[in-house]
Length: 170
Image (cartoon, rainbow, N blue to C red):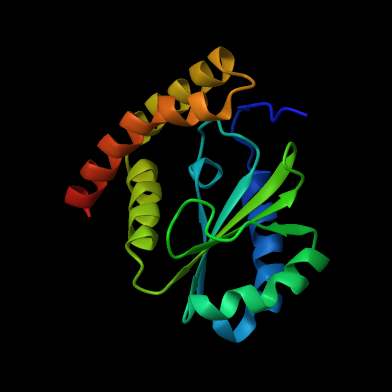
């Protein structure tokens, strides 16, 4: 089955879904966790997004995380290992086609943590930029409804531009 790209209007319940799932994740990793953050488009008010909640978990030691795979599986997560990003542990909830949560785990001081938080914070502070991103995602989802790679590639230049602005803005 092909994973469809669905971008939907902002839903205020995304924050509640994050809060509930953050409690589940905290109960699993407990002492390993430094912080849990809501990231991605569902964390940016009033923009359209894929209805998948992205969760960033900052931990003391990434090497300990694989030992929790069984507990994550018990909570219906699929462990994906680094999944293309060195130093990350990635989990999806749901199925490959119908995901509800993405969990990105990084060890403290990993530069991806700062990049992801800077992006989110910049977009929240700059709603006009956020709306441009929202419109881009809606357009790409219409153009590539069954091509995840093209959808992601279509966002790449915009994300890199915002990453640079967010770094300077911070």
